[in-house]
Amino acid sequence: MTVPITTLFLDVGGVLLTNGWDHHARRRAATNFDLDWDEVEHRHQLNFATYEEGKLTLEEYLHRTVFYVDRPFTRDQFWEFMAAQSQPDREMLDLVARLKVRHDLRIVVVSNEARELNAYRVRAFKLDELVDCFISSCFVHIRKPDLDIFRLALDIAQTPPEGIVYIENTPLFVQIAQGLGIPSVLHTDYQSTCAKLASFGLRTDEGAAHEPR
Image (cartoon, rainbow, N blue to C red; front, side, top):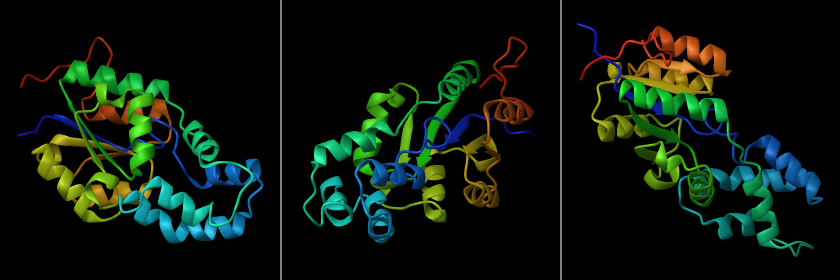
């Protein structure tokens, strides 16, 4: 007997929004603020996992990675630049909103996000109006690719793996989720993701079948 899909697990960066503070964003910051890229990136790599796990504040992260020496710009100016790197993927946000309504889906975010960036992104793009539950690394103190973050998401969602579809843009994380029995979509673009979701019965067109609960 086929288990109906009742829940979407979603990444945020690279799926619903641009990545918040990835390699490209840090490169832009280094250029914009005339930073020594090698030194700042080395410091970032030593500290960012701890920051994403909610074990460093933004102030502490910036002190260790950027403001370990005096700078001709302020922390507020740097934070404004960091926040500005986040932009919405309107097509994907609209797609998930339509799927949620049509198929009565629970939406669970499973993401690696630092606390202050996470809070900004949720507020700025009204993700709390779309998402039912945030399993963010800064809240649960575990990061992908740790299996425990997926297991925790399954426990909180109280949905069997086969009743979930996970949308993620990182191939390794897709493979890990699939290893736990979670049907997954490697997101590369809107059209291909729509096609893959349709293969799971998740369509947004007028002909979409709505499974009764």
